[in-house]
Image 1 (cartoon, rainbow, N blue to C red):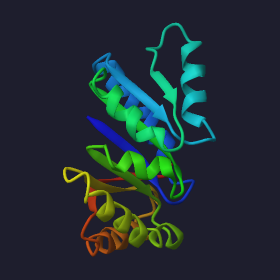
Image 2 (image 1 turned 180 degrees about the vertical axis):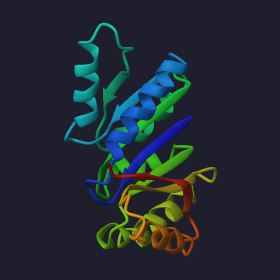
Image 3 (image 1 turned 45 degrees about the vertical axis):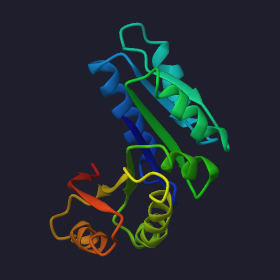
Length: 177
């Protein structure tokens, strides 16, 4: 399975979710690869720090950029059971190429107006990718929601996402601490 964590805006938690899912999948099965396509290289750095700890399972990772991302993911999919792709927070060749080959795309969004503004663009990117990758399923996960029960932004966001035909929303909401 190829799972992309991406989006059009930084700071929504893509790398945090991608690295944690990669670690979880590595723990459950060894044939997992984390591909860092973000030039900030945060997930690659996370993997290198993790490797220094002898008592923690190693997460296999590589960095790939530009148009080679799509081809490389397709080839590596023959060798790995799961591939987790961490794409930077912008429309890029890496994000678009990953959308063309992944099984699932997960777009973490904060329940804020700035993140909501990216929904129509994400819907458009997924719609275009589905012309080639018909099996693509795209999801929005609400991340960093306010734990205050009086703040209803996450509920409002759930309703809004339903207006976009190419995006599904996870029922689970990840709350800020």
